[in-house]
Image (cartoon, rainbow, N blue to C red; front, side):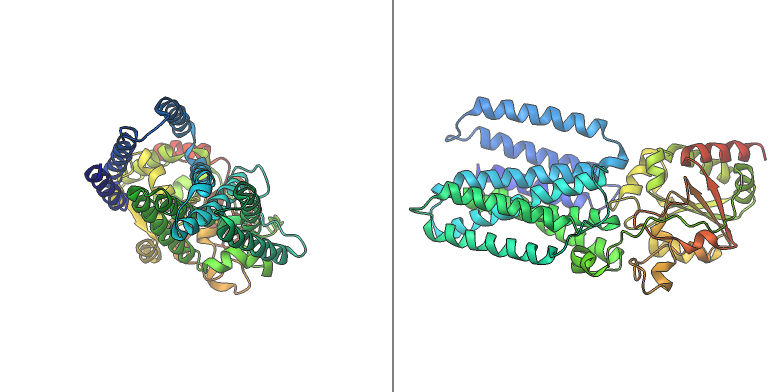
Length: 453
């Protein structure tokens, strides 16, 4: 059993390493899945396991739900699916802690159980709110109300007090009632924790809640005396924390300002107002001429590309440009789309060669010598306000400097602001041309025009 757990733990570590690069990600994912399967088999074949039939039925139902969700979800909905699955993990850890609370022996495991109960519940309700925001079941803007910080702080204090009471009376007190109170308070804390977050900050909170879930899994492993849970939970908690910090750095902000900035007007969700200022628009034929006679083109994909499912069309257009001798690169921002790696995976679906994908710093070194920067469905990650407007909510965020290219072409559905909800002055620049419409339809028209040049 111990040797099997060691093998499974090694699989998790190797999988995490594999997932750090696009060439090894698929293999890493398979190794991690194999480790998880091995761990489940080891548990089910243990001597003291009970209710095997019920557990197997539950696993089968979960597997069917997971496979169907993974196959049917669109790439645009992947972040909210991550949020949903993460919330389920936190909720499951909280249920385990609630069941074990009355029979835990030792102060260390008791503290771990209370921690799991609180943080697992926070992760569950917080993830549910992030799912609702990204799925547009509720507004993605920050939700604030008078006295919100005070109410939030008071609930945390009461929650901690309930845990202290539970710690003191666990042996001969109303443990079930206390567990219910702690869960209820923690669920409300999780909701209030996420409500003030809006705009492009929501995916960062998903990553943070993922780290929370990892920590609860590790703590529940301590409660159950299961070393593998401790290892797996610690890996998830550590990697989630690192990813959260990286995403915050990509936004040019601290985690604290992302979580609580809305109370001071610092959220990335702006007014969503649409300006009436004139812009220069063009037809697909005009854009085709601009691209077809360029020497170098840098494409900046964004969430709009994912929504339109236009990755195959843009790859076909790039092949047509390369056939004309045009050098084409893709500039990928760390938080393009809604999660890190979102654009990489989307373009990989269309068999875009990985060497064409340039991370932000490398792409920025190419842009000054670029004839045309083609922005497809992106907005905030190319907004110069991040460099020039100290009052902007995205000020300080590293961006792709497409304004340094000789010409800029934006493919947009409308003049609505991006996910951060703020206006992009680059849209009104004399060097900028806009092509309005669905990204896939627009790219198809550009492709047809290119072929007729």
